[in-house]
Image 1 (spheres, rainbow, N blue to C red):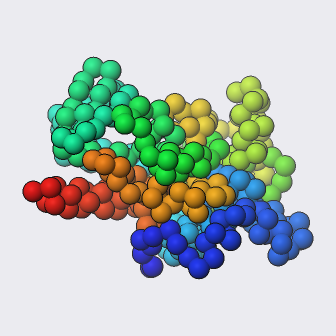
Image 2 (cartoon, one colour):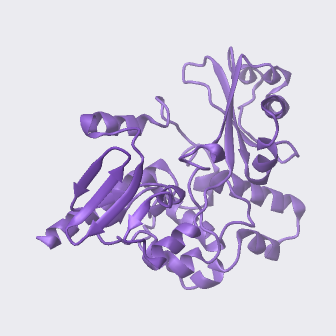
Length: 328
């Protein structure tokens, strides 16, 4: 896979000046093709094609190794999952850190001067020579920086919204759909709220679990409904995929990520037009004084994924080590 170290390409400015939607429509007027392309964008970035920079789409494809890697399951991005849940890597890191990890203390201020960095929470002050910030862009903007962030970094953050997405799980005694030869994996192009469905049953085969995703503009409409109506609409979509029994789960739960205080969307930030051209070279991940930037949005490979989050941590740690060695 090509490792991307700088946000540059021969036609970067041209591609960054337009949206994915304008590019798609300049190449086809076929409504089915446009709908399929739109669902691809919604599924990967939780955004609509009219919202996202074409250059960001191209960058992201290169960072993952191609469109097929992002879209397919076996051997691709959707191939596997963590048996202990997506939080398993974070829990493993927490075990290593032990008492050094502090929870429930959001950072409110980061100050720096020639001597180092001072990180302030509601109850604690931490001083260090260097700091690494590994937060989604909107969460970075909730912190007061003293001195303020440079225009390049602030501009990058302002062009980096989180997508709109909800995730719903329906639980059954067994994955009954398998008995009739159904995979439990589907993409939906109808007028319902659900765009993609996966069989999310545990490896042992029980209980049966279907997970449904609601993206973009469909999320905006669906999220305004009362909880009962939201549930009914999702289950109706699942019934179209797996049969009438899917409308009668033992349990149902949903998470509207756009309403999560710290996430404010998912799965990662994407770039709006002009962001890469105007602010990428200096604002993407270049250190701000003694503050270094990590997080999946700063990754060169598998940007937006847990893999990218982990690799960005290694990259930022190497940057800090190099800076400390240079400081002497």
